[in-house]
Amino acid sequence: MPAPPTSALEANYQRVVKAILPSVVEISGPSETGSGVVFDNNGDIVTNAHVVGKAKSFEVTVSDSSQPIKARLVGMFAPDDLAVIKASGPNADLLKPAHWAESTGTRVGAIVLAVGAPYGLIDSVTQGIVSATGRTVTGPSIPGQPPTLLTDAIQTSAAINSGNSGGALVLLSGQVVGIPTATATDPEMGGRTAGIGFAIPANTVRDIAGQLARTGHVSQSSRASLQITGRTHTTSSGAPDGVTVVSAQPAGAAATAGIRAGDVIAGVGGTSTPTLAELDDVLTTYAPNDKVSVEVVRNGDPKQVQVTLGSLTS
Image (cartoon, rainbow, N blue to C red):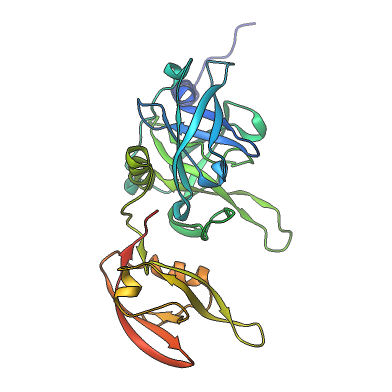
């Protein structure tokens, strides 16, 4: 019996999936398995920093080959949960660079496909829509790294399962609009919430991954920073009430303004910052070089310090 005729929408899905599969790989490390997207013609592959973890070497598998390709870490940028690895050797020529969308134009309701290797099932595809844009959400934790905060994230209803992280969120134009990285968790049950996933927007990916591919680190990002290392400060009763400065980057934003180790940052621009996560969240509303008033408590005495914000770097 002949197969029923293919609809125009179904044919479009098939075209996009066929085109994107050579650009999405499975990444296997010593302890983590995830997905990645081919970034350029030099063997560079962008993925999530939490997929890479502390590993330095990997094997990647592409759709058209059962033979894994060796890869090594180029660099990572934990604040945006992004990393770049480089593949080389036999079969590396099978890697096809993805086409990247201009993510600032992403429209709510756009149909998207999440492509990756969840649970080790390479070439897996789920579909949904863009549910929202401009989300700010806490990303996956990375051992030994500062908290991950996803800014301007794309929310999607396409299923993002374990192992999809680092893969591609693809428009029906065939362009990659984002890198899936997290799903919402049910606050009562603690498990993943179906239909609420988040992706790092393509514009952020191009910026950060481009710097990592060229130099192995990020020298400038669009994220504002006080350029400190900090930890949440608590009162004698255990309540959080600010961020203790563990160290201030020499000649960085905070240090230049006179903020030093031991100071407690209690607020920025009139907004209280009782925890490190809330300080990071407030800073997302500013840009590098913005001038802002920072409430600092030193030896129990509060004072306002004017700071010219710097940029996150790695």
